[in-house]
Length: 215
Image (cartoon, rainbow, N blue to C red; front, side, top):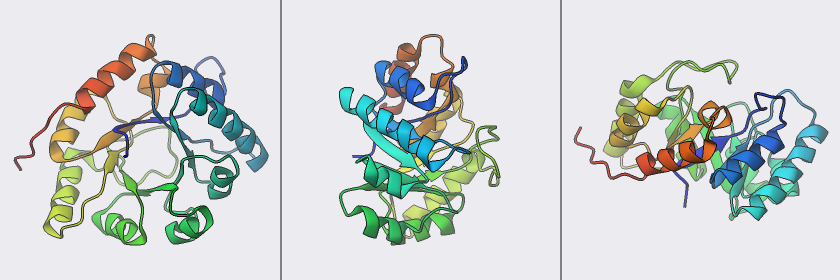
């Protein structure tokens, strides 16, 4: 089961490490954590991944490692999320086995179909709008982009949990869910919240509402 709310780690506003922010997010009720650490050594990422694994175990949360299948395997994470420039999905599956969750990032319907054909369990589709948390940003999709891609997937009979990513705000979620998006990935909205538990609770309420796609 792919959760509807995917928490993406960042360093905290007061210099907290990714692992420390994972701790705060889990305390707030997050059940799906993607540890996304860029521009650090493999050793540094491994250390925080081990800490995050212990934290997620304590809170019964799933841990997904961004970019690094070997680290995901070493810390016994629940899965790995692969970008377009990362290890090929099929190679990651051989390394990790059938029980690991594998997600992939895409920006177009063709990329999405390719990921489905390679056997991913979910996709992160985006960006919805500009976000400063990601370098080398792909073309912005907006709501119409999601609607178009999801419509094409339905026409060809290929559906998979789609997680909207990139610059999302509260007011975007209802429209995205109505369009057929399974869930959303959030970082700053949780990491910079004054009351993170209230934010997570409200996000889950919105995400688990019933939506009918009439398009």
